[in-house]
Image (cartoon, rainbow, N blue to C red; front, side, top):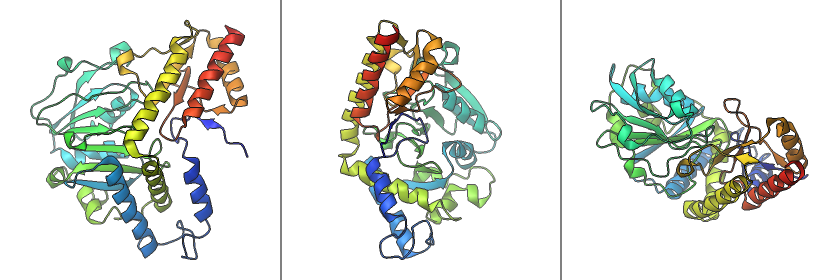
Length: 361
């Protein structure tokens, strides 16, 4: 079997070493006599998986002790809908900075249950840049300010999220978590769907300052209450145990690779390789994002002639480069180069792009 270089934005490529370990343990986990996916989440085997996964994640991300970690079923969009229910009083303002499709989605999720305000947006410019901090209109009475650290579709990323004062800052890190060191103490909470940098689809992580959990929030069922979830060790109902196990394997792999500091260096090199192939093409390829706001994780780009799109994708697949078609919102191409994407894969894509240009330029 020859594995391709998979540039999918999510569900995204997983490290081959993680997949092989999961394959080896699929039929029997340790000496349990059954697969981890068959064992009770209340049993000693899975409870140890859960405990070790949280401990490893705390080490990987340098999570302070005054922050709780909640593992949730579903993805980041579910968390977005629950943020105002847990952390905003009825009718209280919540501020959103919109820098792309997913920031706008987060705002829409909050609107039915909160006074969701747009503090800043770059939509008028096609989400090709970040709104300057001086243009943000923040509400002094807001329960929190929400930002999207990295926009998976539009390919823009905060390299340094601005200060918002005393109001808690909440950030969606779904597509850039663990890609570089992060000072979590700057945030009231961060969250991420696992399916880009942390593991498989179906599980998400919320890292929240414990004092925020003391907020009354709004009337909600216990299953939607993060305090209840934490008290139940993220097992108020049966959790997605296989996904949790895979997340744990992925986190352990990242620690073994040198942790976030090592990935930050690797990711910078990968992004530089790919943007060079675009910028040095003389217009054959283009990326429309302002250079200072370019994402290291998701690189959308366009061919100068859209009639070449299908040939590009077909030739790329033949060369072992898959999942490069752009999102329907933008079209064109997109290469997602998360932690699991090796430098060799990005180099192969850059070489292919130059070869394709040579044949069609």
